[in-house]
Each structure stands twice: as structure tokens, then as C-alpha cells.
Image (cartoon, rainbow, N blue to C red; front, side, top):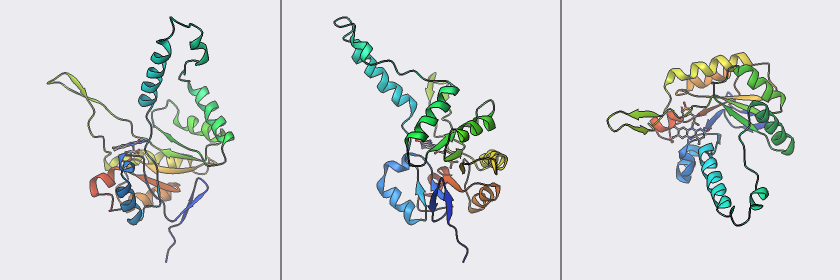
Length: 215
Ligand SMILES: Cc1cc2nc3c(=O)[nH]c(=O)nc-3n(C[C@H](O)[C@H](O)[C@H](O)COP(=O)(O)O)c2cc1C
């Protein structure tokens, strides 16, 4: 019988199927169902930057509430500034050097030069890349003139961009690569492996078909 075992970011997985980051990981029963359906690993959902910024704003306003009484207090808590690309690579390098566990980076495809970014992060020591993240795409309800956040599942053809970049990076990176975006069927997983991925992350297909139905 063919073995489906794969080595991804230095970890041996029983097969390449990973449940990608999403709200399903909030629900322990759903995670158990995914495991029983054959999922080999799970990515816990992210803490989004907006949440961090909100907490940062709350922290700042709490600290600033005392500014008039004790101006020196703000010096104890320097502001958390968002860095540019160089700081990003520098921060990644520091994380990789400080940890013994593997570090995986999930990227959006919206960089001026995606391959250069991946290459720089590979040189910084990232153990794996997830190609690609799917950004939330807001919409506007023109009837009420309000911003809305529609449910943002991928479509099947979205996986072709991942095939392109997995193929382009294959053989040129130390890190391993997980494919993500628009992977709905077993055949899509096969294509990703053939292009050079060592694992695939799936979310939308689980929302469409139920978490107990692995592609
Ligand atoms: C409801 C929902 C929640 C998501 N939450 C996260 C998240 O917390 N962190 C993250 O990196 N990606 C998140 N994503 C993006 C997915 O992990 C994945 O990158 C994207 O859906 C593309 O994969 P797919 O085509 O299999 O859906 C979320 C997607 C959905 C639909």
C-alpha cells in the first residue's frame, strides 16, 4: 500500500492534509471529527493584528489616563510600532534563533516581489511557508451605506496561484512549503505535492462539505 507519510517543517505527518487556520479550531468536537476523518495536523486560528491593535490602544489609553498626574509613566511602556519589511525579516530571524521548535510563515500573494520575500525569509531561517493566505475582503452594503464582512470562502480555481509559486520555489528553499487556497479535492492535493508542496492546508472545503469529510 502506498504510504502517505510526509515530512513538513521537520515534523513527520501521517499524510499531507492539514486543517488550516479558521474558526473551526474554536470547537473541540469539530477538531476531533476532523482528526477522525484523517486530518494529520491542525493550525490553530490566528490572533489578528486588529485584535492586537485594539488591545494596544486600550493599553495606551489606560497608560495615558495617568499622564497628567505622572508624566514619567509613559516612559515605562514604549509604544509598540509596526515595522516595515526589513524589521519583519529581522523579527523573524530573532524568533527563529530564539526557538528550538519549527517556525512557519503564512504569506499573502500581495508582495511587490513575492519570490524575493520568500527567499529573504528562507535565509532568515523560516522552517516552512504557507502559500497563500486569503485576506478578508470587505464589501459595502449600498442600501445602508455600511461596511460589511461577507463570508470569504475560496473558489476552486484559487489553487492555481499556489501551484505557480510552489513550482517556482521548489528546489530553491531550505524551508518546506504547504499549499493553501482553493484546495477542494484529493486531485488538488496530488497536484500540490507534484508541484513540490510537502503538505496542504484546507479550510473552505471543510466548511462546504463538513469537517468529517476530508478531500
Ligand atoms: C472562517 C475563516 C476563518 C479564518 N481564520 C483564519 C485565521 O484565524 N488565521 C489565518 O491565518 N487564516 C484564517 N483563515 C484563512 C484560511 O486559513 C485559509 O488561508 C483560506 O481560507 C484559504 O484556504 P481555503 O481555500 O482552503 O479556504 C480563515 C478562513 C475562514 C474561511
